[in-house]
Image (cartoon, rainbow, N blue to C red):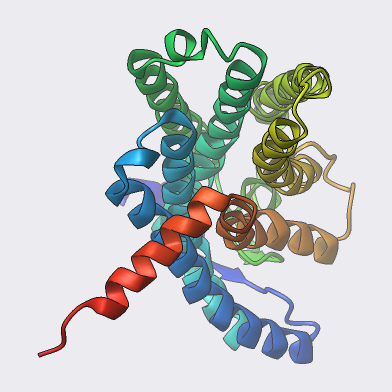
Length: 314
């Protein structure tokens, strides 16, 4: 009740692409298919890595954590988005919007750090193959994964709590498809200058710093690969790195354009499309990218499928 006394707004309206009803109908159909495919693809990766003892190595365990993040990301955004696309105006409660923003930031922040640690893992494996077991031992792996998840929690807690401490006096119509920070801030009826400085600085640290570390890692990796005498070795190294680099480009490219821009930087519809890119396409494409570019994952998938087919029926 205290929250409602501070603010006259008790619910928000997500407009989605209400100006383009035909587009909304098509998007509803597309994402009605994308959602279960995303969940199934990432769930298969989680099962394959969990069941296969040969996959209990840092590279695949990082991928397992990434798939868990993608499942969470999809579950937070897609069901609500399907509701938005099926109606002209979708109501979301104050607490519902708070929860959605929290988990978007939680899973988004965790993914940023996980992608950074995965780049470090590939850097250590390719540039220092003999020392790799000591560099990326079990203790280091656990610390890196724990750091990624805890950092996501901290980012989400600080930012979401701060945003929803502002008063919302109206209007309550949010010209967006989900409760992302930039969209919610536009409805705040208070001076948000200090928060915007914090958010910009935080985004630089959370998004750009890992991104720069990833770029530096891959520059070193590229030189190491080019020095490899074996063509097969070079192809295998390029294959594993290409998967990760594709995910990084998809996620960081659109996330940077969404969170590192002035309020008037892009039109509302452009912002919505960028949000769709990093919050929906990345979780969908990650399992496809990693599975189809990795021969071991393809073999494990076929083995799992044969085991399922060979199960006796009663």
